Length: 292
Image (cartoon, rainbow, N blue to C red; front, side, top):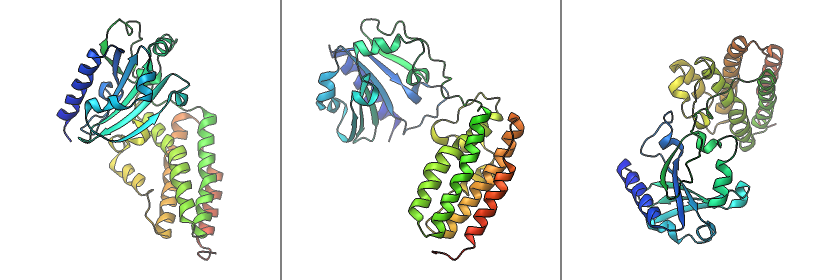
């Protein structure tokens, strides 16, 4: 894939929009217009069309062929977004992916007149076409929506408590030889809901709470030391039961280390007794006869 291919497709979208009487404005959003976002040849085009009435373009997909040959598409109608807009996410055969957001003019105007700029626009936007000045009153993006916020004490304690609680489900699943459920708990719950925010807070605490690590840890490697990144990598596991046990304890060690550091930096109490008691439980379960 080439950046030039994406740029050519963007030009085609702009040209088509300028000639289309149903389109009143077009915006480019997301990473390509966010100065703090990583951009490469795999970055998507995020296009927002504002139609006089979007219904025709929601129902009929023939228009997406104006920009190439689609090989895959995911559609979400307005019911998924409180009636505000529809989505058509298209992968073309030149491997450029375009996420089209389809607004009706009335819904767009309602949205931009809100007291606060919506998150999708606060990340960054660029007006590509505006035939009647619809975007003139849009607030400027602050680029702050993705900045990591300092947690309140209650949230911090909940994350740590829930992390240690859910490790017990992984342990029970591993001793039962139930690898699928163990993976669900470790990857879906523990990594996503607990480990990710803890790492985000840890990084932000070292950067005066004025930093973003992008979606789902995309920039973790960039901001962690090589030693800490290695510890993060050790939390991933393969198919073997013993590998998954090792990953579980790597998660526990990582949470102890960054949780303790964060507690000191934030002035919150770390649940030392809970940590010790659950570790004792995990070690006890691991020593039981496998598959019993």
